[in-house]
Length: 327
Image 1 (cartoon, rainbow, N blue to C red):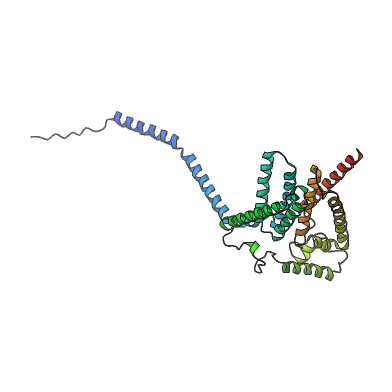
Image 2: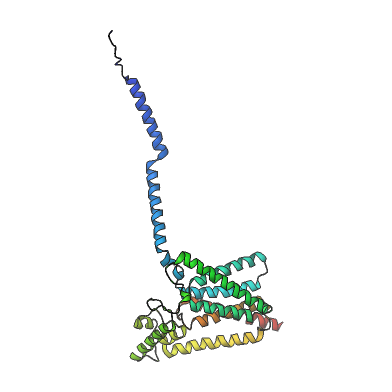
């Protein structure tokens, strides 16, 4: 019996239909997937990934002691200024939600201040808080309770900043507040380092015979190759000589005279908004004065801005008092 083999293949029509279906599916697939967009997204994802890796690798350098904001000691001084103003607003504000917001702001400010790890800045912060609690008539009414609350609050913020620092910012660096000196570091961390800088400045003035005239603006940095003198009062002398000392003495005497008269008049009680804010600015000036003994320099604009705001507040308080007396 003859076997018949079926040799019938695809017809031309069937091939055309198959090709057309494949083409339609390909077009639909291309439209849906959009390879160009997919590649762009892949490139964007890679860029994002690279950015995350870069930030992570440089996080220690950026966040260590608040360098992302500015120099740690300057940042601490600015935060102290902000703290005194915030406390003044807290003492004058009556609206509950505003008080809550101000307390939140104060907590964040103090927390950020601890992250700067500026010993002089934090020491002046504590001095300012104690001064305001003792001198403010509202806070003095519950002196012991407020002092205890300050100690507890500052301790909690300190512990929080320590844990945050150790687990996020720098796991390999010692907590700077626990160290008295780091001789192997470029950081100026002790009084000995500062004395060396002051001696270098005096030596340059003596060698150049400029004891009376000074080294000129920026002269200390240029001749000694130190970043600055780490003492606001000495920076006047090193750069401006005797004229600098006279200038700063005039400012200091004027401020001390006004502060003394203010405290004699308003120590018993501060009632008005301007009186309370004046006392708060005095606390801020006290913190700045203490901090400036081991840091800061005279040409930092934010210092003069704060002093100007304090003087304006004092002037407004005095004018307000004169108006009340004339009525």
